[in-house]
Image (cartoon, rainbow, N blue to C red; front, side, top):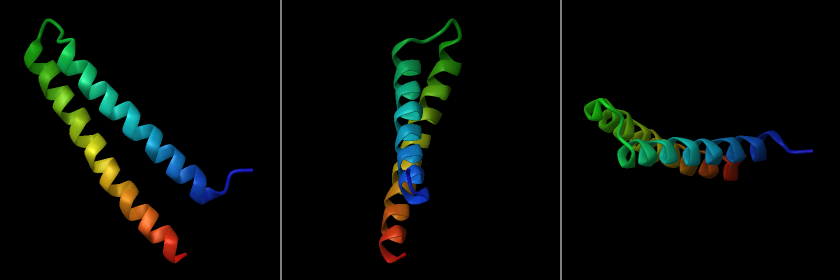
Length: 65
C-alpha cells in the first residue's frame, strides 16, 4: 500500500511530466492559430517548472515530518 507521502510525490511527478510534455508538444506542433499554441505551450512549461519547485518544497517538508 502506498503511503500518502509517496502518492503525493508520485502524483506531482506525473503532473510535471504531463504539463511539461504538453507544453513542448504545443510548441513543436502549432495549430492553425499558432499564437494560441505558443501561449498554451509557454503556460504548460511554466506550470511544469512551478510544479518542480513545489515538489522540491514538498520533499523538504516531508523530511521534517
